[in-house]
Image (cartoon, rainbow, N blue to C red; front, side):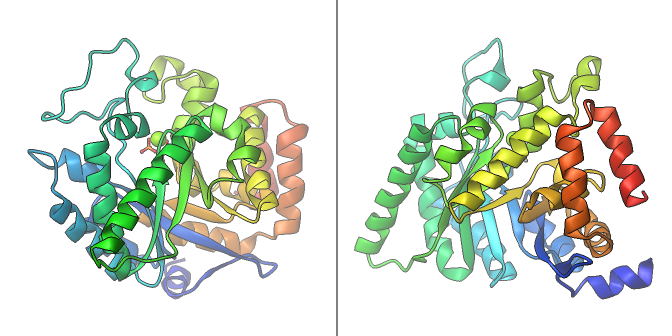
Length: 324
Ligand code: PEP
Ligand code: MG
């Protein structure tokens, strides 16, 4: 196994029937890049920029952010880097940014909801990203999008800041894809409409499962409901992938499920394009993909979506089919 993984470090991710998929890595800070390079990820599928804010004693300046983004983009270039704008709120707090007391923080003021409200913070981040875009392949995604109006509002601000920088003669990339996290069921259900507006989707199963099953992702008392293989989750995921493809867009996944050896066969069968996970899972998943054929996995996915009725049955089904 060691020897196989060694050769896979410099390989691309190909299935037994010769189809290529992107196996990318999630990072929280530029310090994580060593692990990404060591494991040969085919890009960054999720850069959680909130750590930049959480590791700082005050709001990070445009220049501080620019340096961090530039470092990541330059290091990965020409491979793509999907940067998520800050996802503060929920359980992530900043000492210097007081948020309102809330009964339900996970259903409250967080992520894009804060960014659209506190445009000073959002514009600073977008300007830093735009400036860094000249140094690699930047893609931007917005977290916790529930409505198309939110995406359009975020995009409008992005375009304004882009025009401002260009007016000042700053070099910015002209091909920055703008996408959204699919982690709120409303966005998953409406993916066919969203797909006409966005350049890509990245499915955040950590939150999507929590919100679909109404089960707190960190609460052990309801952890039995946290079911990645439940057909309700799989059907949402399939709808998102199909909707993207219908509009010629791509769909990825950056929640934990994307690096789960039980989930990956089902996702391959549904045609998911990009799989983003912790760097330490990249070689394991690349090796797994090499053994799987997409035609077989399509049959498996069909069964998981339709025939089985519970999380546990799907778990058993995938294990049996893929010999794990
Ligand atoms: C997710 O919700 O699946 C996700 C990737 O975002 P986070 O884990 O940072 O909430
Ligand atoms: Mg999330």
